[in-house]
Image (tube, chains in turn brown, blue):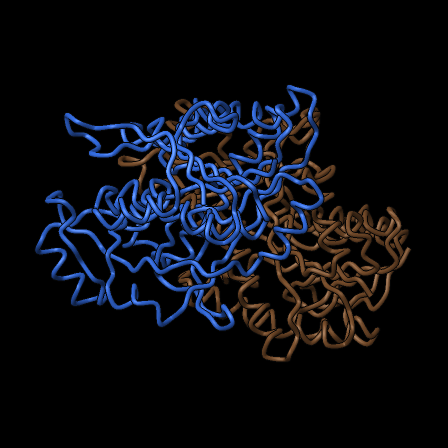
Length: 309
Length: 309
């Protein structure tokens, strides 16, 4: 089966880590071992990934170097992160595949994502990114750069940017063609670089939710399964409470109901469930939410949370 | 005709500039106006580009931020620069094309370049990269990191890395396929990220000469013309001297003779001439060295320096 795999940015760079290239490569390598098992089972995979921690580091470096070199806008930082992470994934995948006698080509496509300039997200920037500032710095930055600054969970002030809905990918045709040629494609990293409709001629300082991007990509490549990898083996109801219950299987209708009831927070499980719903409503047959370690079993129907139309 | 266009990294970020995204985008846009004229003339183009100034800035940001965040190795910085520059080129090309009613897809392929670990370049690191250091700092860095440090033209000390010969591209098949599908491909940026033969499983801290990479790419995509863009309209003999003479046309044999006589310095025109020779000896029919402004005329045989087998 054709499977769209969405790797979390945290799977590549964990918060407790320093963020060296060695750490990230070793995490990527670990993920690739599991993905190659899936390929060995006879499946075709297309890969996308988050980029939150990596773009965070690029933004922080820009901030620390700002007296010497001009900082890059967020769309350019997103492009840099796609290069960095795509490189680590394609090299590690190739090496793991070769170790098992598979010589499929792995190719990263630098992906731009079309968003609607009239998306309501643009009037309400909600997604905190980059370094933390004091209240005084935040006020100054707001005045100088016009950035929208928010207090991020009491940890300090950060820039907040819009998170518009991904509509399609500018490079969608090329991605589809390569997948048809049996190339393992890495695409839409970090949800892709947002560019505005109608013609995608301008990058915008916004972030795309990588899980929503994954749903669009799954439809572009006509995947049968959308596999969203996260830290937990299953989706839970009442997560973190004494009465938390794991979910083996949900329908789109149940997902909608639980989303309406606020079961899944917007910062974590919410976008994953929305992504599954979006994929299934556009013709997908099965969405899976599980951990890297349980991915193979989940595909076989023996682990994770399965969501069906 | 199918033309491989090699854009200089300096064409995107000039030394006198600060390096803002706006400057770079505006330079890229100016280049794309010329490239689209060539496409309007009925030619197919494949694009590669340098990345010297951009990787320099990424390395300098890493250095300035090193007390807070771990610097990335050179191969990862190269991957970042491919993302950054590829994004600017694909967006600008697309927009310029659309303005003229052409809707060809423009796609950047993150490219790894196979090099031979026994390449003699590895025992003789010659290419200075990144920030400048004092003699004392250079000694300390040499001890701490084992870097090869050189005095760069009396301007200070810099790290020197090997510049091995590019053999082929790991993503070559995918690049060729997309070109066959009439996609405008941006590939092998900065010569590509060097990875070692036999299986390309490890990135190396080295730089590939982007012009030599361009010659390999021209053969990969079966280009008829290799168009190397630089700051001057023609190649000169005795360049910079009172008796300097422009060259309209050279054969491979003449190129070899002039190279042997030391006419073309290794830091500037040398690799361009070598690249032309390599392309023509591998089956190419015509190499052109000229400026962006004269590119169209050069293709028509009315400007630049033409090199033939």
